[in-house]
Length: 344
Image: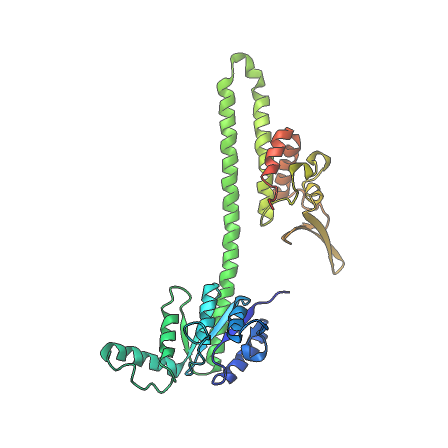
C-alpha cells in the first residue's frame, strides 16, 4: 500500500532534536518521513548533493518547513540557502507546505518589519539576537507573501508543532472526503444533464416524424414512437454504467473487437466479456459477497449472488437500457460504442 512521503526541510545541526521528534511523529501517523541527514535522500553519483535534495522533494506528497535562527549553507547554483530552494521546489510542484518558525525568530521578525518602516536607513545593521543572518527574515516574508499556501505558524517547542500538524492534517483529510462527496454529487448532476440531452434528442426525432406524417400514416405512429424510445434508452446505457464507476472506456482497439451484446444476456456479462471488468468473490464469516471491478479497481457490490440486486431500481434500469442496446440497428450500436473506445 502506498503511503504519503513527508519531506522535512530545515537546517540540520541547530534543529537536530526537532527533526528527530518530527521523524517519529510522522511515522506514528503512518506516513514516511524523508530527512536528508537520515539517509533518505539518494545522492546520485552524477548529482551534487544540493540537486539531489531538490530532486527528492518532487517525490514527496507533503512538505514540512521549519525556520530557525540559523540560515544554513547557500545553494551552489541558485539564489538562497538549500532550505530556501527546497521550499521553492515544493511550491513549484504544488506540494502542500506546512511552515513553522521558532517563536523568537517570529518575534524578531516583527521587530525587523517595524524597524524597516521607522528606521529604513539602519534596520539591516540592527542586531537581532535570534538569527545569524538577516536573510532569514527575507525568507519568512517570501513564505508569508506567497499567493497560496502561505500560512506560517510560530512554535516554542515540539508539542506546539505536533498539535498544529495534527489539526492541519485532520483538516486536509476532511477536505479530501468533502471533495469526494462533491464529486459524487457532480456525477449525479452530469447524469441528469445527459438524460436531459437524450430526452431533447428524443423530442426532436419525434417532432420530425410528426411533421412528416400524412393521414394515411397514422397507424405507424405508435411503432415510430416505440423505436424512438428504444433508441433513447439504448443511448443511456453508457451513462448509467458511468454512474457506477469513475469512468467508462473500453480498451479494445476497434468497435469490432467488442463482444456482441446480443450474445450476452445480462449487462454485466457484456462488461466481463470486454476483459476490462472482472467479478471477484469475498468470503467473510462464511458469507459470500460478489463484487464487480473495473480496470482501475473501482468496484460495486453485487450481493450474495451475482444477480442478487437485479430487482433494485438502478440495476433494473441498466438491464433495460442494455436490452434496448441489443435491439437497435448495428449502425446505431456502432455509434454508441465508438464513443467508449479508449484512444491510446
